[in-house]
Image (cartoon, rainbow, N blue to C red):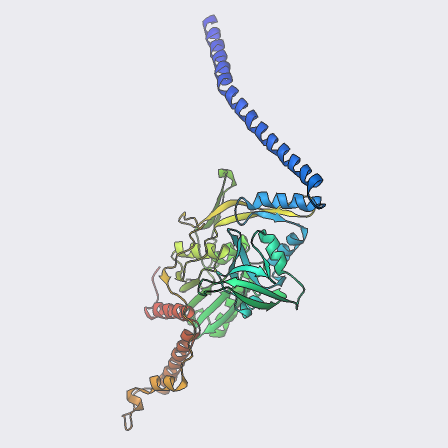
Length: 444
């Protein structure tokens, strides 16, 4: 018995000795790290006091601290930053779908302000601002050296006032000016219409209205067609959609999926990750789906496109998307401001990270500039056939219903041809759906 007790005590003593030998250096290392942090904070305090005492002009102390906080956050990545109370309020209003400004989504690259996309039906889009443009000056004032928030503040102003932005565009040799009249931006999250028997659903942003608008729009179009059986399919147009709320991206993806993962997020710590799955129910009951994307499709748009692509639920058409695959958490702070901090990355169901890569389309289709086709050329193209020849034998084998159907099909074909001139990518998407329907129903 004594031997057992001694052996046990020896084990305990050995364990204490071992833990002391291991933990000692770790504690010392952590103490050194903390000491270094405190030294750096002392350095910050010293610099702040010297600026306050010796700078050539009297400084606004609150603005100086705010600039230091923002500099710390923006040094991490382009999407982290400090939101003063006014910006925090604007952001909350924007997610509800109405705000004042030009109607552009911007980011910052190497100190330059880059347009992610102009938003639908906004002054910026009407004035000709394009995705990928770099804005170098606002009313003659250079933006280089400003934070993104400061640059955005310069672009804000009273509704009805004019602003002139200087733009550098890859396809132009020289910078040029664009004058825009500021307006109140009212974003319509979803617009739905029919092209023949194909539903075109344009999603311009992901805000609180997006999924309800999508659901209502599809329901109305299906009713207009006389039922789901008459629907060829849906084109989900996410071009130039800069993203928005994660929960809305999940709901829009879920609208067309019956099961499986939609997206996962992974942060610094494994326990911070989340996984979001689809629930049963498909708004179009498995009908063909084409998703349109381009370089202005970012964030939430890429989540939707990636989920539908990985589940082979949709054909992705267009050009490579923007590649914003990071998640920002908004953390309210003292003083009614907030901190926007990148806390995790998005991953598609197959485990792909969107970050800096984007979503590659299944079918690469570049947009073509609109071309006005002369009316006589249209007539010439349509007139060169057997039926146009003088004295040609007419086809009398068709019934009135068949002739009516033929005329309707011809009208749809002509409308698609016109659309191809106006929006080549959209017309291509409709052609894909038409081809899929020509093959007949697919088995499950």
